[in-house]
Each structure stands twice: as C-alpha cells, then as structure tokens.
Amino acid sequence: MSDSLPLIVGLGEALYDLLPAGPALGGAPLNAAVQAHQLGNHAVVASRIGRDALGQALLDDLAVRGMDTSFIQRDLHAPTGTVKITLRDGEPEYDITRGAAWDRLAWEEPIAGLAKRCDAVCFGTLGQRLEPAQSTIRQFVTAASQAVRLFDVNLRQDDFSAELLEAGCRAASIVKMNEAELATVAPLLGLAQAEPIPALMERFKLGLFVLTRGKDGTALHTADSITLGQAARFATEPDADSVGAGDACSAAVLHGTVRRWPLQQTADLANRLGAFVASRHGPTPLLPADLLANGNN
Image 1 (cartoon, rainbow, N blue to C red):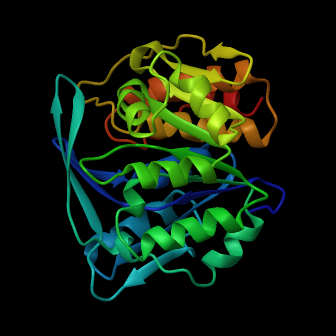
Image 2: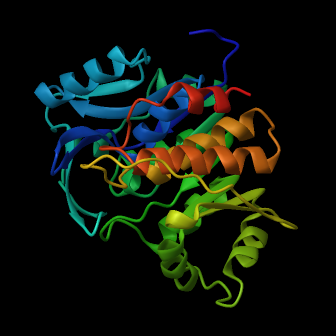
Image 3: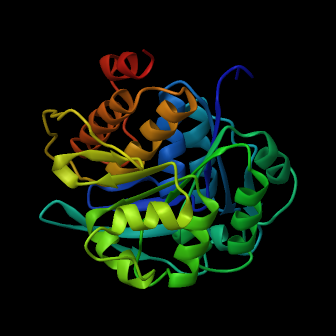
C-alpha cells in the first residue's frame, strides 16, 4: 500500500454475519474499512479473532481483497465472533454471540502505533461492550487526536449505556446514527426532544453529524447547514438485504472528509454507496467500476 493514501481504521468488532443466504464478513468497523479500501484508501481492521477456522477464513477473505491484516490480533481461548441475522420485511434483526474474541482486544503494538498515525478511525458501541476491549478502543481514539474520529453509534441489543454513548460522543469529531437510534439516544443523553441534533452537536463540539434515513438517504448536519445526498437507486438482487448499508455510508463520509470534499459530494457518495449495498446480499459486495470512479473524483 502507498503511504500517500489516507490511512483509515475500522476499530472494534470483526465477525461473520450468519445470513439466511449464507455467511458473510461482518462487524460495522470491518464493513466500513472494507468499503473504504475499495474506494481507494489504505484501510485496515483493528480487531481480535479466534485461532479457529472462522478466524482464518476472515483473514483469508480480507487478504483476497488486498487488505493489510497485520492489526488483527489472534486469541487462543475465545472464538471468532458471529451474529445470526434474520430478515423481517427486508430489515435485519441481530442475535449476537457472547464471549467473542473481539471483546478481548488488547492495547499493544502495533495497534498503539497505528492510533498515532492514522488519518481516520471508525468505532462504535458494540465493540466496547466488555473489557478489555472498551479500554483499548478508548485509548486508541484518545491517542488518535490527529485523526477524523467517527463514532457510529450502531446500537445493538442491550450492549450500550448512557455512559458509553456520552464517552463516544465526547471522543468523536463526527457522530453518526439512524433515526431510530436518535430517538433512543436523545432521552438517554438528556437532549432537547424538539431539536436533538443541534443540542448534541453543541454539547459535544462536533464538526459533523450524520443522520441515515433508510431509503431517504443521508443527511449531513453542521452547525449552520443540512446537506441531503442525491437520491440513488439500483436494481435489487433476489437475495438482497440492507445489512451494511449504514457502514457503507460511514466509509463514504470518511473518504470524503479526509479529502476535504464539499459536503454535497460526500453526501452523494454516501447515498450511492449505501443504496448499492442495500441492493445486494451481504454487507461488503464488490463495488462496480462506475461507483468507484465516482468515489475517486
């Protein structure tokens, strides 16, 4: 990989999604890193997997895609994580296994060095559900003060708390969530119900807030503007699911932000990337040439 490419880190859970149509690479930070890699960045996953068949398959899958896997730790005792996903009217429901290797992510080299030199990092709540991973992720984000720090709230089951959300927002330069998550987060953080986004941005001194709105696409909020991505539609495969569409949005936001793109250009790419992923099976489909060309403008 060229050192001139932006270095983007997906920090937290790396796992396999067990979908009705078959297993697929998963974990929001991993998905975002894979898509950022496809867009032309030096994107890596910082996580922990088991010394098991699934873990080796995960490494092999990333290597086939041309990704650097040297920041993925191996665990002798805990298994590679899995998530059973069922689809109800095309929308995913998650059953997340406990005691996964990612919960044991350790603060050690080379991850500590990665934090100090990355250009951007994406992290969430699920990867911080247990120690020592929670402390490791917080140390990483604190050390990465030079980087764009995207907190993708990504609420799952009961693996979050007001304290976790508060700490994540405070550590971030960008916060991203969907409309349902905003409705959950606002009362937990005591935000004004009438205008929770401006209240959150002011409280945590955020440069950007990203709201994903399903088929209505992405809205990028700053202190004085709201930028809506241009609508995007793709022909849908028979076994399509929406898993990973939000993670694709995260990748697009990081891709545009580290390049200092205009917000409209970033929002348009987020919509196109999210819509394409939602039209395909699994969270990390190969991106078509025209979409990649759009991302490299």
